[in-house]
Length: 236
Image (cartoon, rainbow, N blue to C red; front, side, top):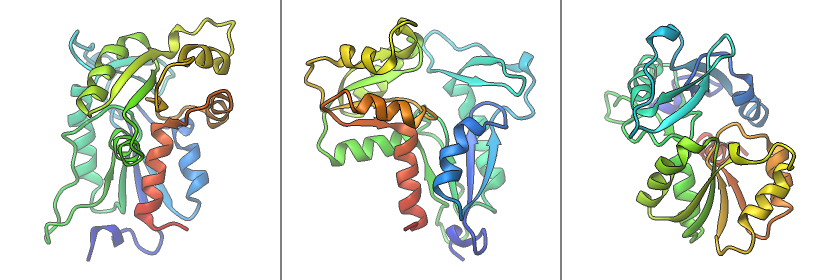
């Protein structure tokens, strides 16, 4: 039986967050957009004690996430990858689709091969963004990441994927300046083909408000991943 049919009549989407569950802020758009799908949320750090977390190395890819008690922590993407892979392996028998709810690249992740050699679809937001932007012929990007420590590794990530980019940190926005106005000033008259929020879980209303201020298209990695999920599930 193909892996995509193993969850029964309703597809089962296993959504992976890099912190601890629950994370309704990251799954609200998913559940609203796919009401007929069953969604199971798994945290890479579920069962991990805070004292076991390792700080991000200077040359690592820092990812910020949230623990169950509300604390925010910054973790190296390389230390999260094996935890995510462990959960993907553990849930593969049930999954119709695996969906990683993080903008980190995680190129090493893969679903296990079934007896026929087929694999359950695995959706990574960064891969979804690369495919969509390349298909549109976009080459020059302005990119927004959550905080300053991500600027350098995100620049490398996008450059290695074949794009020319400027990367800015959302945390640098002055608190008194509304986000749409700040982004409009930041992008200005630059020659970018698109603005990309290198982010999963960014509020859709703010994305829309930013889009109305710009003459270039605005993308968000989380929503691009949901577009891929829609195609994968064959949703109308």
